[in-house]
Amino acid sequence: MAVYTQLGAEQLAELIGHFGVGELVSAKGIAEGVSNSNWLIETTGTNGTGARFILTMYEYRIELGDLPFFLSLLDHLAAKGCPVPRTIHDLSGALYRMIADPGSPAGPAKAVALIEFLPGVSLGDPSPAQAFAVGRSLAQMHLAAADFPAARANGMGLAEWQRLADACGADGLAAIDPGLAGIVADELAQLASQWPQDLPLGVIHADLFPDNVLMLGEQVTGLIDFYFACTDLIAYDVAVTHAAWCFDGAGNLFNAAVSNALLEGYNSIRPLSPAECAALPVLARGAALRFALSRAFDWINTPVGALVIKKDPMAFVRRLQFYADPANAAIFIAP
Image (cartoon, rainbow, N blue to C red; front, side, top):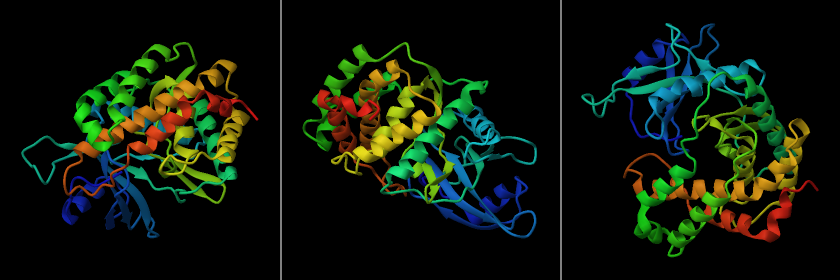
């Protein structure tokens, strides 16, 4: 989440009026994340008690044609009892609306969607018990999505990693760290030859970082930000979540207790097959490289003045190096 586009009070009020959720009371920009503009919206609600929502304007990395997949998936999972926010349809039943960019009124319109606000806080330092709950919720989501009728290719797979590396260029990567270009080139070549092809497929979140999970104590109250969701290897989603949750922010320290709890929680709902467990070291290297490259691209290309927090690519290079060490492969074997 971030804010790239500024919307005035009158435009926001008019927009919110199309959703039948009461009158706009306040709107606050949200700085976290990198791909979309987001606001925390408060309205009078429909019964006078007030209501809160998340308003998202889709800026880049998201194709307009993918929005029905993302937003319908939220409705599908919420209906199955997953802790996922519903999409608020507008008064005509549409999943999203198109509005003019006030900074470029002659340019193309942008899509915006209103999403249910869920209570809870994102964690900076999860406990093993909280990681166990996240693992369970991830597995619950995978099972609930099994009969979701739509499919979407992973737009952040191996081909995109190569494109991002090329777009950054050796000089751009070297400006971040002198060794980064060599690490990326070596890892891309290895992953292209080692990537598993015969594991179970399903709808995955593909971006389940701590800031995309809301919790109250040890209870997961919200899985949010499904805008990288796609159809891919289910075990890859476990690897992404592992890389996101089991290290300190800088990627220097691995937390074995959190790792064990996350995997135990997942396996308590959807046990990983022996083949999936064996593939996790490679999948985790891929997950770490994927985020190192997208962060590197954003580091180089984030517009000056954007209300967005730039994230260090090297934090995921350190995770990649951890996963690439054969001595660490045993972390994916049940304790």
